[in-house]
Length: 452
Image (tube, rainbow, N blue to C red; front, side):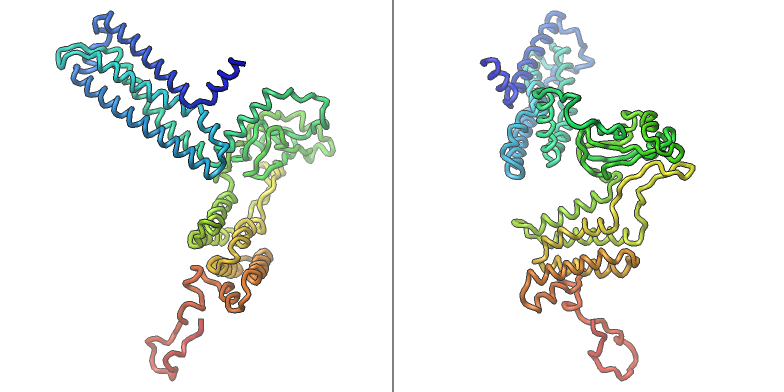
């Protein structure tokens, strides 16, 4: 039990790995200094290390920089832990403090500092003295490694502090624990696996699909591949990734094309990553803008102006999509035969993705509702007839939500007035457009403009 407690302390402590790295740096520095003394300080010539004064200046800079860097890294780590506690969960602290890469980075910085200090003590004289060349060279190598590690540490910390990074950190560790602590599944347990399904090799979001490679593989096997998840979907490890359907020439023979396909090769043609990206996933860009908009009008932020800025871009994106044909979800080979089918987001799906959550969260904010009205009014002017129904639905639901949020008829009318700036360019807050300014007298009295 004592050994178990010691191992647990080693795994959960932040200080042990850095301390071991510092001790290793001390031992290595003492060893190289001993070699320098035994060789009479001739292992590495001064033409490489510089004069004693040059080496002292360089090592002093190394030691000062490493001391400042260690303080900065520890401070940033503690601040990041505090932010993670407040933003996500206090229970995430243990996973962050036990991160091995962060511990090794701190240990390397500490070892570099110790080696630089110990080497400074061994330098004798100013210009004609002795320089422990091997140890100085070691200090330079450690400094270079520290610079590379610093860049990697910044990247690693940025990736870890994302919501997806923290979720993956806990999820991956728990998955490894399940794999090591629970017995492997028996073949007779559960339903028989579908022979016409190609499973995913690992969990993650579908990031990229090599459609050309999939079409070529399906053509060789004379089959049709159906991509089960939508691009951007999270797929669990072992879950269906593809379904294999017979080709036209094989008729009802379903097993034959499956036998001709190599499941591992097919699964490798789909890139599964830790989170969604914009590579082939346009809805993800819409998703992120909606998140910004919805978060901005939620308490305690209450920032409808940021919501309007996100709505500007959502309106622009939907305006581009409104007049464009959407992907049909079918990919054909050079003979025009369908070889790959997949589900894609429809026009109704894009409209709902862009507006549903913002409409529900911002019904009580007149800036949001007026901007939504302006976007829907403009989209109805450019969308073809077969794409009008989703916009009509949004207008109807927005009107109902505003009626639930307000009781006064004037407030309701104001909240449903189209305004591209929320409150700032609507017909009820701007002057009317006049076309008679500067024209010859036609009998029109001043002020008789066209109502806006």
